[in-house]
Image 1: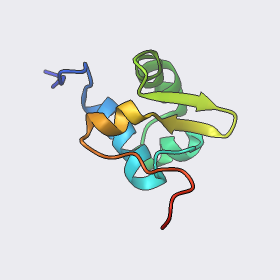
Image 2 (image 1 turned 90 degrees about the vertical axis):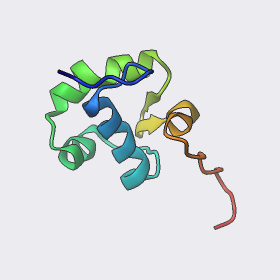
Image 3 (image 1 turned 90 degrees about the horizontal axis):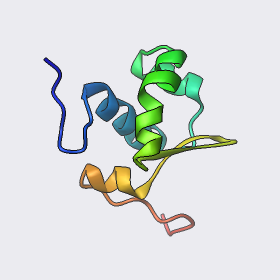
Length: 87
């Protein structure tokens, strides 16, 4: 049985978003790099995982790659980094 959280995420949805956040700083990240990082096929990401996450506002597709939204960061109790902020 699939474990689904209050936002409708299953294990793979959470894995995709957390990989984007933890490994790629929220993006942008190319779909091929993302597929390799989570061990999933590109088609599975594009056809199965992304549509729901995009529709619900947790990620977007840009010309430079996939990007998590602030909503995704907040879902995991994280603060989205401020662009151009001090390091």
